[in-house]
Length: 244
Image 1 (cartoon, one colour):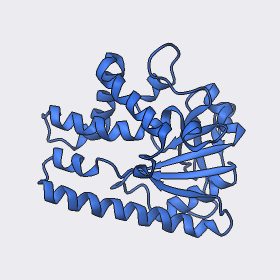
Image 2 (cartoon, rainbow, N blue to C red; image 1 turned 45 degrees about the vertical axis):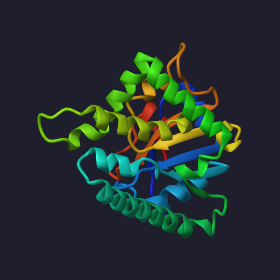
Image 3 (cartoon, one colour; image 1 turned 90 degrees about the vertical axis):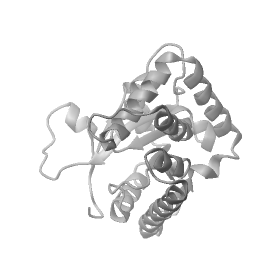
């Protein structure tokens, strides 16, 4: 990645595209233990996002990481040590990447998910997520599909997720989902786009029409990923998606 790296932007819906074009705020989620999020890429994302949005937040996951390790075979002590190591590493990479760009863009903020546990809006949204997990079969199924999508490939061939593993995944997801529902209310911004480098299976449900647990009207979602240097923009949709 270079300082002038390009990223391809894929807003999920037309409304998400309008929110993206408003340029009020973008939240970039960062996962621990994911080699995609090196400090160079974080720096490129920070510079790129700051040139397009009035405010930029990086939020890295640090809740229930130890439970995820424990659910997938680590002893409790080993899981705690491994989680602590991964969280410290991702925090270090995010801070390093942002610090390299902060000279030109001082408004970038870095937070851990746990920083929002005292935020009343975040707590309310988190309770809603847990409630719908218990009462809404469609939402629970979507969360199950998301857990299988991200964690299933790590299981031994032929094995299915246990109830304990699935619950650990649910708790991990529930901590992140408030920022896909109503970041504007959590962070007091006019509108916001939640950006991640891969599409989440649950997005179809959260941004669908109808009842149930849904993102607010001023909450957007987009896949933001590096654009291959050898990919020439095609007519129409590709030009619209490209943000270089």
